[in-house]
Image (cartoon, rainbow over the protein chains, first blue to last red):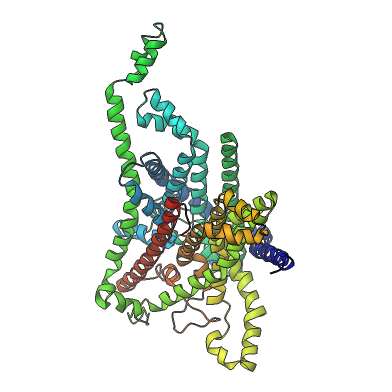
Length: 284
Length: 336
């Protein structure tokens, strides 16, 4: 094996790696490009102010929009976050701060497993636990399903953030005679604040893009509804129904929904990145 | 608390009175710790219970056909016809195996390559850009990729690849036709390709982390022996990072098994076996997504729940395997 051959092989490997990277990044840019181009041309002021209504409404050229889906998304996602944030943060604290507890190991494994569970199964679970007993599809059921999606993500990120806060912080608190819970609440959590916020934001963005758990929990509908005990519409799920519908007008609206959803998720993602960078910078 | 008092006592008499006011009653400590500990424990175990409850609830709701036909009877039954009330999971199990393992086999080598490139080769700025884009790809909602698939990717693939391949096979390779099938826009191959794209970010991220965790001495040893960059990676980095990479691939498989919307939008939804590459199919998540809303017959709902139960079992097992690999990796910090 000559030196020359070894160098050529080195360059060849490098070329293959670059090629693979380009092959992965290219589709992403193409997708974003298509969504931007098709979405912007389909966005109208009515999109943000009108309800969807029946297909006839779009075909007759009357103004239609997805105001009701946007409202529904906000309501359901915030409700889900209010269910999931306390549980996820509690679990994260448990995993990081009480590592001597014998239940810690099983909880960690099952949290990881729940994180890898298909979102559609969260929908089936929420259907069985909320829709079946109450007898109807409702926004609350959708929120519960989305909360199932959020909880393990929040728990894991809170755990990893708390683990990276320096142990000296806890030692200082304990040396001052503070009880353990007070150390966690008053020194550890505030020190990890931006990291926790990042995790919560990422969980929120991830759940906001999910349609599968909502299909048979919040169910969706074409008109504005503010009663959380009734079916409510959400953007991801509406996007799915628009895309598989037979109407051209609705396909265009689907692209508009796609751009709104994509920009929203990207905004959350950018905010989370900025937060974690600020956090990392302060630590370093 | 005692230490606190002693310390302030030594520091001077001036503040001797203050600790007594600051240090609260013992109840503040014991009760507070007990309540907080219990609360956190309850919240933590509720997640664990949720995972267990998912399996139990799915079995309770979907157990009837499994009890009737037996665990493997329902699994291997090939007919799914809600109209006649015949329910067998086999078409969807086959679909799931094809799509997920197909996506994994397409994605895992390029994904590992990207992970290695961004961790080892790329200049810092380029690596940051790649990481950013890969994370972004993971964040793009699957319905957004789905609408692009329906209106852009699927028609384009049909006109550019499926139709020419089909005509070519009809002319000169007739034995391929049973595998390829009649081209449709929405088929198992399109769904698998997009699924591969969607699971790539997970493999990339985990490969990247595993490669980064390799200690510097490990690399320096190989470099001191005069190896090229690639030889160093192959001989001293990859063996060390293997556990993490394998765990990443297994976790990506779990993603591929459960990813729903892209598949539901692009697989074409047909449960008639045998599947062909260019023909419609269905898998476990997609049949639940497509039929559950419209399922009226109680037996249909129950059968879909049973399909969900099998999906639960598969993903649960795959996740546990990944957790086991990761634990071995973390505890030993050594080669798997």
